[in-house]
Image (cartoon, rainbow, N blue to C red; front, top):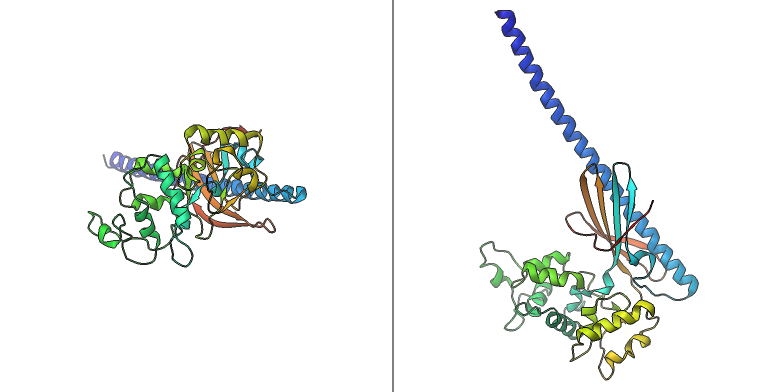
Length: 317
């Protein structure tokens, strides 16, 4: 009996050890796969850096600095097959969007031209219950409510989960979800058209912006959906090489186009999604390309975003 008891005890202990060892091996395997996937994502970021620099060199050679969605970096997402998985990546032009931080100038004053653009965009997107004053109050350094529609600390500290206003530029566009009056539906509507770049970045790349932004650019008038689409259709075959070509479009005849515009860009986002052994790692990097020498600088990385690959996929064998 004693022998049988000892044998049973040893069997139980061995079974427990094997089970724990299998768990440890699984954890180590998961950690290694996740680390490898992240390194692949960093590799995709490096490919994007090189792509953007080559694009700048080609523009320099041709003495024509323009950025359009028909170029290699903007046309589609790219997929790279790897062992046990695939790397997906895409580059997006952040200056084809309205920079939410440009609502406030570097000296703390409000930029009325940018405010007008956002007000028009809200109308185009039918965002009726969110006021631009609340976003301005989130960015400005003071704690004074901007008119009757603004919101400062007093409006946020009384919430069920209280918090304070940022009182500084947005570090991430996701901060919009903290604004009083923002809803998931409004956020989804705004996301394709807004960015969070340094305060001084105010120009819109007229070769890459959305139809909704085209409709929002004129002072005192909103273009129709058909007029916005007509500009999109025109630039597909005839990208704007100069701002004069853009400003003489018939859709803007008799209208005033205020503020800054450009035909090229300096700020880009690189989205990388790596699927490896049924596990997914995501990375969104914000890059700045210096207009004078093409130098690429990293501004931010974010691993918390989903649904980052939005363009049609081109698979590279």
